[in-house]
Length: 384
Image 1 (cartoon, rainbow, N blue to C red):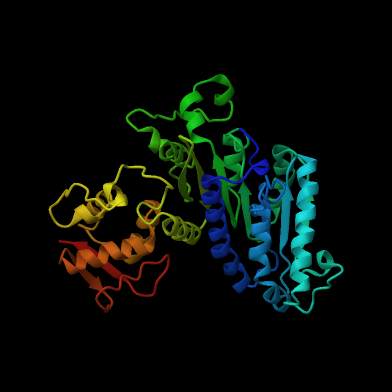
Image 2 (image 1 turned 90 degrees about the vertical axis):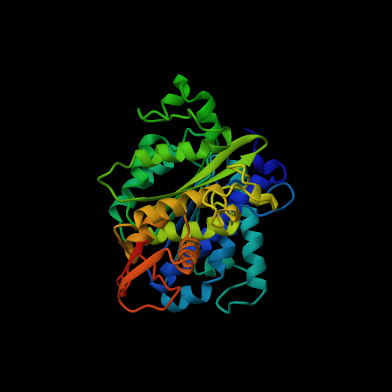
C-alpha cells in the first residue's frame, strides 16, 4: 500500500479522518465535564501530520479538538496527554515541525492568556509525547500500564496499513481494557481475497470468516461480524463499524467501547456521515433511494421510501416488541444493531402514528420514547 502522506488524501481517507474527528469531538467533552484527572489520546500511526497539500491528518486533528478546551483544562486541573507514534523517524520529525507551527499559531492568537508565545509546547495545558517505535513493541510496553491504571479514560486510534498489527491477540487485549475506546482501520478486502493464506491466517483467530452469499460491497460487514464473534456471549462489549470504498477495494473501521454510551456516540457520528445506513461512504445494498429513486415496497405501507436495512430493522423491531420491551432494552437493541437512537426514534414515531404500537408504564407524551442506557421513566412498548 502506498504511503498516503506523500500524496493528497483521497476521499476515503477524508471520510476516515472525519469519522475520527467527529467521534473525538463527542468523546472528549464527556470526561472534561466529569473532571477526569487525566485523559489520554493515542495515535499509533500518526504519520507526519499532513498530506502533500497540507490537509491535516489525525495528529493535528487531535490538537485542534483538544485546543478547544484549554480553558476547561486549566480551571478543572485536567492535564490531557497526547501520544503520537510512527516508526518512521523522518515522519515524526516532520510531525514535530507541524506541531510546533500549530502551537505557535495558537499562542499568537492570544486566545489563552496562559500561553507563552515563545514556549507554547511548555505552557500548553496538555502534554505531548512522540515515539518512533514499532506498533507491537510500543503497545505491548504500554499495555500493562493501561491495565494497572483502569481509571484514566483513553481513546486509541490505530490507523494501521493492512491487517497485521491488530491481531486476534491484540484485539483481545483491547476489548478487556477498562474505560478505553478504540478505532482501528483494516483492509477488509485483503481478508476476503487472501484470508486462507498462511501469511494472513497468523493474524486471525481460528474462527472462520465466511464470505459465502455476500457481495464484495458487504465485505466489511462480514469482517465486523468476525470481530463480534471473538467477544463471546459471556462478555458485554459494544462494537461499531463503518465500511469505506477506495478504488474498488473495501476497507473499514472497527470501533470498540466497554460502555453503551460510547457506541451510542459512535453511531451518532456514523449516521451523520451516512444518513441512509450509518455505515458506508458508498451504496452498500444498492438502495435506489440514495439516488432519488424508489425501492421495492415490501409491505405496501410506505417502506418504499426506506433503504433495505431499515425495512428489515423495522420488521425485526415489530417482532421484538410483540411480548413487550422496556425503553432501556430498546436502547440497547438499537445500538447493538448499528442503528442510531435518533433513527430508532424516527421509526418508533412513525409506527406510533400508524397505530402499530401501544405503551404501558409511566405517563408519556406522544412521540417520546426515552431511549437511553438508564432512564427514570419505565416505559414498556408493545407492537400490535
